[in-house]
Image (tube, rainbow, N blue to C red):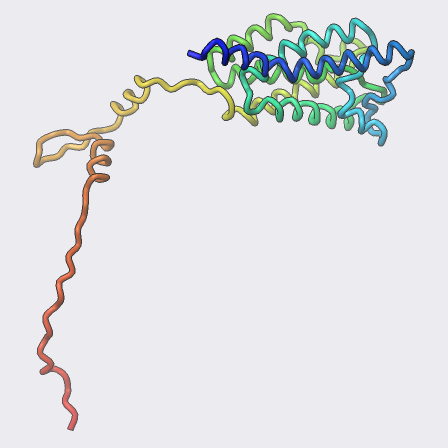
Length: 250
């Protein structure tokens, strides 16, 4: 069992990065609101040189209060879940989602400015859902079901149902999350292997019958015996043979 102090420390570390990202999102929007500026031009515009910077800036720019609020809460929840359950791969996962979804959107998106953290949110949701399904680990599987239940409406966002919404950003974010879940499926939490499963594997091994000892031995037992077996070699000098067969010189 993890001590209470370690658990609090773990939860604090897991929320730190998502909270930092959301804080930047709010800071950028408040600056934009206070000075009366429009930062949409710093978003991602597909197939343009200036639009390339949007690959990195897109999650921090929002068009309205509702847009910002709707992205903030799932970013906190899903970001915490990512850093809590997948600490070893969390940073490269969130960076991978940002870069992959941004690059794919830049290549194939509509010729307009795309803004908002929705692509990253979709990437996190699909990463957690697919990872939980692939790993068959109880906690992660339960989390994936919770994600599907709380953010079930996200699935419709990958379809072109509203021309004002960047469904391409949602789609590529979701695909990036799925791709990274498959890529990192052997990293992070895995399904535990219990002792009874190992014993079953040993029982399935065909035994070897030793006719001298009249006992059946498994291959594992024989392997252990062979490991303990010491072989000693003795070098014996050979006797000199008579040299009669050799031709003699005159």
